[in-house]
Structure formats: C-alpha cells, structure tokens
Amino acid sequence: MPILTLLIALAVIAVVGFVLGRRRALASASGDSRKLHSLPSYYGYNAALTGLVPALLVLAVWSVAQPMVLENRAQSLITQEVADDGAMNLIMADVRRLADGLSTAVAQGALAPGEAATLTTDSTDVRAILADVGVALGSDVGPDTLQAAQAYRAGALSGALWKSALVLLIAIAGTAFALMKTNAAFRARNTVERGVMAVLIAAASIAILTTIGIVLSLIFNTVEFFKMYPAADFFFGTVWQPSFSGRGGASELGLLPLLWGTLYISFVALLVAVPIGLFAAIYLSEYAGPRVRAFAKPLLEVLAGIPTIVYGLFALLIVGPMLKDVFGADGALGVAWMTGDRAVITAGLVMGIMLIPFVSSLSDDIINAVPQAMRDGSLGLGATPSETIRQVVLPAALPGIVGAILLAASRAIGETMIVVLGAGAAGRLDLNPFEAMTTVTAKIVSQLTGDSDFSSPEALVAFALGMSLFVITLGLNVFALYIVRKYREQYE
Image (cartoon, rainbow, N blue to C red):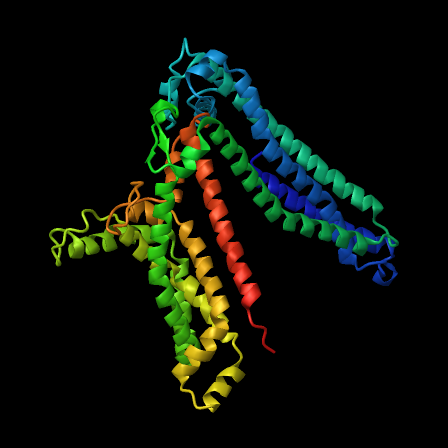
C-alpha cells in the first residue's frame, strides 16, 4: 500500500474513532453530558489518538529500519571478490537502481512479476530492459548484483505489505481498546492531555536528536578520514588537489586554501552588506515616515527570500561579465586585473547583496529597541538628530548590531551556490580579489557529487571539511550570542 494511501486510511480510522468515542461516552451517560467526567469531545480525541499515535510511531520506525535491513541483506549476497573489485557503496547504488528498474519494468508491463524475480544475466540482457524504462546503471550487471537487486526488491515488496497490515492493525486495535475503556467515569481529559504533552515533548526532542545525529555522523566519518590521511597535512596543507584515482596516495587535501577562500569571500560580502544594511536600518528606524517604512522594509526583506541559486546565476551572467568589462584586459580601465568572469569579488558582491536584509532587519529591530526617552533627552540637551544617532542610539545598540553582523558572517561562511557559480573552483592562497577561488562548502559538494566511494579519503574529506566548517560557524554563533547577552543594555 502506498504511504499516502496508508496515511489516508489512518486518518479515516482516527475520524471514525473520534465519532464512536464521543457517541459511546454520551450513551454511557444517557445522553446527559453533565454526567461525564470530561467534555464529550475528549472521549473522541482519546479514541482517535490511542489508535493514531502508536500506528504513526510504528510506521516511522519501520520506514527507517526497513532500508537498513534490506541493505544488509543485499550486501550479504555480494561476494567478497566483487566487493574488492568495486567499492561496496557503488555496487549498492547499482543494486538499488536495478531494484527500482525492475519494479518500473513490471509496472510498465515490460516484465511479468514472476519474470523479474527469475531473471539471469546469462539468458537476458538486463541492461537493455532497464534502458527501455529509462534506468541507467553505472557498471555491468553481474550475477551477484542482479541477485542482490532481486532480493532487495522482494524484501521491499513484502516489507511494504507487512508494514501496511501491522500499522492498520495497531490503529484498529488501539481505537477498539480506547472505545472499550470509554464510560462516564473515565478521565478522558487527563488522558488526552498527558498524551498531547508526550507528543509535544517528542516533537521538541526531534530538533535536539537531529542535531546530535548530524554531529555524530560528522565526527565518526571525520575520524575515519584521519585514519587514512594525516591530520597535520589536512589542517596545515597549502595545496588542494584531490586525485580519486590514487585513493589518497597522490592526493593533497590541504584545508588552508579552502578556508582562506571562505573567509576572503565572506569578508568581501560583509564589506558590502554591513554598511548598506546598517545605513538602511538607520534610515528606516530614525528618518523614514510610517508610510515609507511600511513599504521599504518589506521590499528590502524580499532579498532574503530569493533562492541562492538565483543569486548564483545573477553573479555568473550579470555581475561577473560586468566586472570583467571594467577590470579586464579589454575593459574600460584596461588594467587586465580580471581574466575571467568568476572571481572572489564577483561572489563577494552578490553574497553581500544577499546578506543586506539579514543585517538591516536585525539592526533595525535593535535600534528600535533603544528607548525613545534617550533620544528625547539628547535632543533636549541641544544635540541634532544626526548627533543623537551617532552618540546615543548607535552606542546603545552597538552590542546587538555586532551580534547581527556576526550572524550574517555565519550565513556567508555557509553559502554554497553563489560561490560555485560566481567564485570558481580553484583552491589557492592569494590576496588578489579578481582571481577565482573556492570555499569549503563548494568542495564538500564537489567531493560528494555522484556515487562516492566512502572507503576513500577523497570522499571522507567532505566530512572533515564539514566538521571544520561546523566548528567555525558554531563558534561565531556562540560568540555573537555572548556579545549580545553580555553587553546588551537593559532599559526600563
């Protein structure tokens, strides 16, 4: 049963449980709701939640566990010789694609259901069958790969069937159990409130558990990387030159060129975003009238809603060629500083435009939080509005503004698409802003593009890069919060 159909069935069971629970409670009180411990709707909610929540929990656990079980079962069918010839994760990627292709071929009528389970590479051109249904494989289909794919598909089909049956059975059994307990004396409200509290706690825990899972995955894979590649060469290496053919032997995976490019581009972006964003915030909070502010602030914040890929295309197609027309050999200045469209300054300018609403919006809120009494006192002592802003408002709001700038810096460090399209892919240590450079995030994407062999340092280095970036951005965010909390003035 498809997952959407299963969810619809669970919703129907919950609605039926709600109606029956409410009706049963009223019947036990002879139709007089005053004889009930709780409102009639609570009895309905109790029946609905008792059937729905356990069923959804089982569905979630099954959906997570089933792929792991199928992966282990399929890997056990791959002989060690085949696994040594090609990386296991690449083979498993073909197994999954082959299993999906067999299912697609059956759905389109290219194969009979029984034929898909009995195919052999000796008698059938499996690749041709899959090509007819639009599925491409990365390597030749061997007997072990086909057998593993057939087992994977069979397990997925039987697992889906058992999952649907078990989830529906749990939902019906839970609803029936709740209806059996429903009577006038049953404390339905207390039960429902405890259940809702448990659901809220579980929902609040998802973010924490997700963060822990992300950190642990980074840590474990980073440790595996440092078992294959020296940590000193990674942290202090000045050359970034991976070679996937050498499985680490001919690769130079130095962090410093990528880190330099990340910080350099972020610095250029902040040079653009901080003055413009701060001046915009000062104008909107101190000079603009209500009508102008109501129009200008939302229009400025629209920049934050533009997808970063659009900014990347803007950098590649508009800003890069425009800068080359000015600073290139054939440009207006004739200085030959910029040889290509991709450069640090290209990505930095566009990223700075993207960061303007982050700086302006946060700074505007912080400046507006400064009490009006301080402005009135300064003006009453004879200061002009501009002097009041420089000598009273900005010093009072400075800790918050610094925090806003640091948060914008964290956003800049983690940006990917603008860098990929606007800054190039060259990892180098250079002070020239008109040269192409790259960042940590861009190289994480490039190292994990395609079917990656996670037994090689060239793929595992992405996790080491991600861990380094995580520590940097976490430090910036913690420092920003520390600045805001320690130096923020508390006004009555």
